[in-house]
Image 1 (spheres, rainbow, N blue to C red):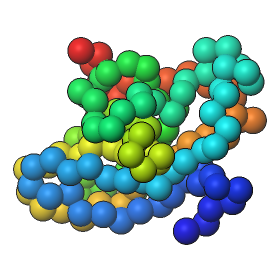
Image 2 (image 1 turned 90 degrees about the vertical axis):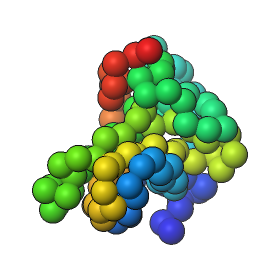
Image 3 (image 1 turned 30 degrees about the horizontal axis):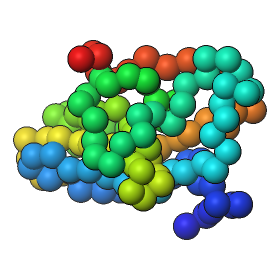
Length: 126
């Protein structure tokens, strides 16, 4: 894995979304998480939790999930809000689907130097 100084800011992955719900460890992590010091209101990595929070739980994550080709495989795939796992100290995302499918995605944590930034939750807040 391309860790640099303990951080991984982007990861292009191919993974299987099973029939049902699966939690994917993206491997993304960032040691310096003082985003408000760089830009007030800068989105955090997401909710800090041991398990996936309910879809739409605030705060919205700065992590971007970008579907990659073949896009037809994404037709029935949905996902929750990225969250910072307190178990692995990496970003996780919960995916769900009605059938088994392999998909390609880019997970991206924009560096704070790219900010300021803003984010809405991927789903309606509960």
